[in-house]
Structure formats: C-alpha cells, structure tokens
Image 1 (cartoon, rainbow, N blue to C red):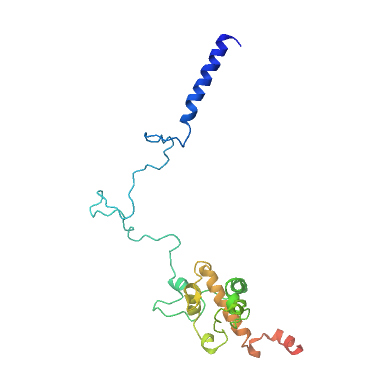
Image 2 (tube, one colour):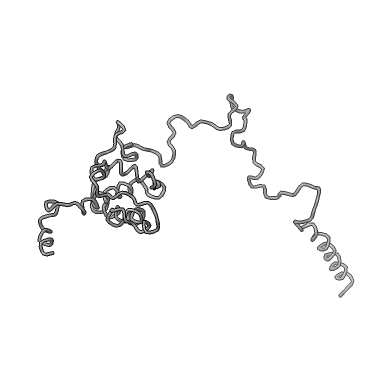
Length: 207
C-alpha cells in the first residue's frame, strides 16, 4: 500500500469513526433534533375548540354552509330511510316492491343476523337461547302479525329492549329485505289453503 493510498484510507476511517456516533439516535444532546422530513408535523393549525383570531366570533369550528348534505345522507325519500310517513306514522307496507330477489336477500340477511336469536322460523327459539339468553317474542302472535312494516324496519335499525340495533351491520335496503322475509316467515306458519297457488296445492294433498 503506497503512502498516498494509506493516508487516504486512514482519513476515510477517521471520518467514519467521527460521524458514526452522531448518527446514533439514542445519544443525548441539548440541541434541538434535526427534522429533515417535515411532512405536516409542524403545520400551522387550530386544535378543537381553540380560540380563533381570524373569525369575528372567535370560534375555530365553523357551522356547515346552509344546505350542506353529509355524505350518504341525501334522504330524498324520508319514508324509505325512516320507515315512517310525512305524519311520522309507521309505513303499513314495505317501502320496496316485494320480489323474489328481495325475499332471497332478506332470507340471507335474516339467517346471518336474526336467526341466532329468533330461530329459523321466527319462533324465538334460536341457538343462543340454549346459552341462557332471554328468549325474544315469537313472530307468530297476533300483535306482531298486525304490526306495521315500518315498525319492524325501525326495530331492525335501532333495536328494542334486549335486542341491539343493526343499523351499522344491515344497510337500509337490506333492512327492508329482512322485513319482507319476516312477513314470509309469518305467512309460512299461519297460511290458509287459499294462500297456496293452485298449481302447488296438489303437492300438499299428496303429503
């Protein structure tokens, strides 16, 4: 190794030894830390409820502009979202047309969210009743057969007594689908012969 190469190598090694301790993040220092990447850590901003000298009323938090509609809150048809009419009365019938896809969707959602308590046929004998849960009322009683569809929709959304609300788990359209299947379950346990289509009655006779 020549003298110049050796001298350059020693100089490089000295620089490394001097700079390495400075890169150690745990080293104590009275100097302020070097914040190379600022991002938005030191942005000028107001904290919640902080006084503002910019607005005349001194309030930092501002009211929404009149007519502002929050995302997913454009309720053009209030009865569809609330289950009640313009007089705040429960809708007697489902807000959606009863179709086979709606009933199938209602059955699917019912089996996921409702059947553990209410049972597969709505008799209030779900699987968790065997674990000590308070039995819910059966759907097959006169009071619940005659109750409005809007009432059932509201109970699904906000709950009642021991039943929690399912507004966060069950979207609005699915709630109406569950209501339709709720009625189908009631009819299945309280149907008359006239409710059965004529082309299917022969199958009942065979049984």
